[in-house]
Length: 92
Image (cartoon, rainbow, N blue to C red; front, side):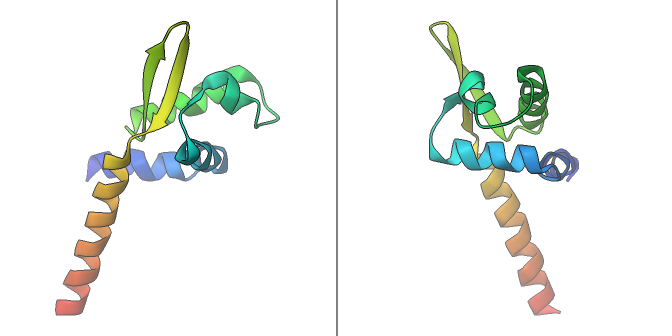
């Protein structure tokens, strides 16, 4: 459950939710992500680090670039947890 705390904290920020939406389409570099926002690259890097700490995204070095992509396992875990909650409520 404590890992979900990091996940939900990461999801609480609209910038990070938008980054997730962007990465849903395809893997992107930090520069490509930053181009979608009116904020500094260090600010985007901060948001990417929070998402990485929550294990919501993964990074992979390709040449001189780092590509970021979604870690769908975390989202599957959240959905399973929510379904379990719903099933438990129905049984009561």
